[in-house]
Image 1: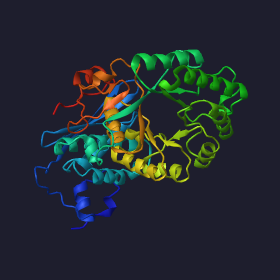
Image 2: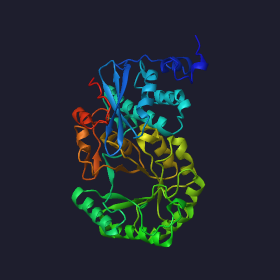
Image 3: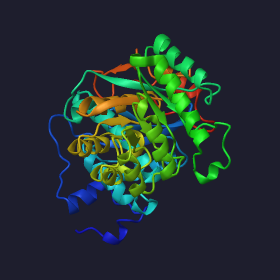
Image 4: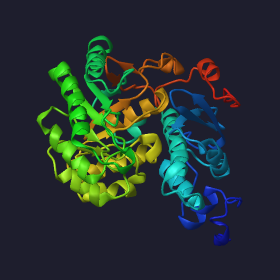
Length: 412
């Protein structure tokens, strides 16, 4: 019996991936060694952190549960619910096949980018946690093993007055001395008091000098104790970005992030190639296809995919492999809870060209309470040797901080 291909892109069709793979790919689901496990359910709960984190759980008939996380954003839980019928009855060990079929089945929802890829990412992370538990190996082993036992973390820092160079330098010193980080990031798209019209993306000389004063104050204060990056959040025109990057060449800048809007790769390439200040981009493009031109055209010095946004753990590994062809390091953007932060660390352990993983929640006192294990210590994440991701949700904390109207996961 053949597949009715008119139903392939119908979101209401009842084809499972097992039917599709059996008919179109010749894949058999039977496995030995106790690996014949079926997905029974997928659930989400959104937690109100410093961003709204979408936590994902995948349940199986073996009583084993995998936990993942999708990048924050409205719509991910609804999309995951739409995808659940395509996963029920499937073997969770077939991570690549399941992920690719979700991309195919959700093509009508725009699965080349945006929240659809984000939703798939959350499922993919949960599949890694689940597969690791079934096979009794840490998640990094599913990505090919590890290069390092711990992954460096860079702390995204803020002050009450982000436009004041001295306040920024004081906070940088505090985070290094008191919190133990040796890698930091500060924002540069902050008001200088010299703006005439921010909508035109043009930087006047006084504005550039104000941003240079922030960079100078921070880098001189921490000296060799920490690397410091600076984020522009896609704010400036091409010409202004070139002038700013040129002005910052005299300082020890780890990288200048997203100086121009992400749509025009030609402008991005010109900015990057015009300066010796390292330029980092990547969080606002999706899957390996979105990152390809940035790397092939040498439009970046450092690539910065956001793992629970870009397509998941294996997709990030594929991006890292592509980057390695051009000798480009990877610094993963990350605004996630401890779940996706640990998942990003597993990826960082498994790729040769990892620089660091971002931590964006140092001001959120209960961030570490969301899981039972310690995640970040002295600015590093030690990679767990326990099966899966190696973190366990504290459901009491999840329930305490759920977004209003959300329901708690089933325990098993």
